[in-house]
Amino acid sequence: MKFVARTLGLLLVAAGFVGLVIDGTRSMVNQSVSFVSIEGAAGTLFPGAVKGLEGQLAGQTYSWLWDPFMVQLLQLPASVTGFLIGALLLWLGQKPLEPIGYVFDR
Image 1 (cartoon, rainbow, N blue to C red):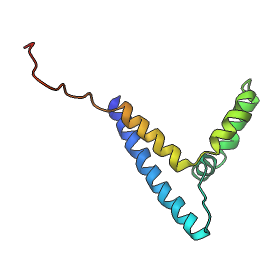
Image 2 (image 1 turned 135 degrees about the horizontal axis):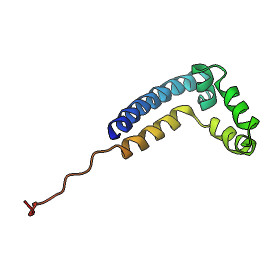
Image 3 (image 1 turned 30 degrees about the vertical axis):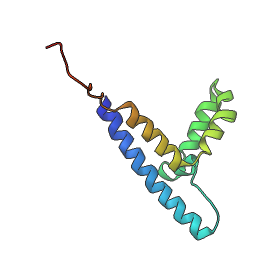
């Protein structure tokens, strides 16, 4: 399980770095700071996914979850969010540290 966490973490950190480079290039060309939101990235990768998620959450009893929480969550920068989630997965999947010193119980 730790291997999967480390692998996903490395992929998300790499994707976050690539996203930051793309956002930085776009910001320099436009001469204003601009980031791609999670909603924009999800809309590019999976067309119609955000509308389907909204229909699922708002159509069921979770309509209170969509408006204040999910709308704000989907407006976060995708590159920074991917980088932070990847760093968290790398931290969770790290190998245990070796003990320092002599081991006496042999």
